[in-house]
Picture (cartoon, one colour):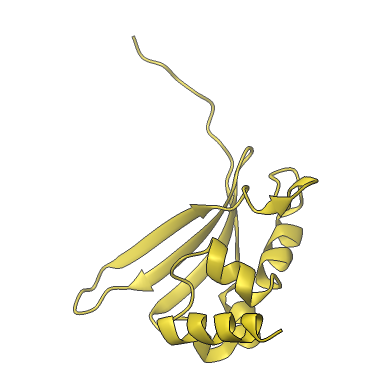
Length: 119
């Protein structure tokens, strides 16, 4: 028996230019796109990188609904996508390092960690 489901609407917003503006060279240079992906029920961050010596791309999808505090998740599917995109782009570097593996270079992540621990 075949099961059918309604097609889910998905929206995306590119945030890499804003992340590069805020974090500069700390962002891995092989990253060519960072998008917020909104569906009816979830919020993801897609990181797209070029692979060395290949013409292929690799996309890593991270569900970011778990990011939040006592009041619940900060990134909700019912929030406007632009709000979630702006909030993620302006999340502090320390949180981004810990929540989004692979966004920063090793040196960039270490710099952010060192700055955080010097506070």
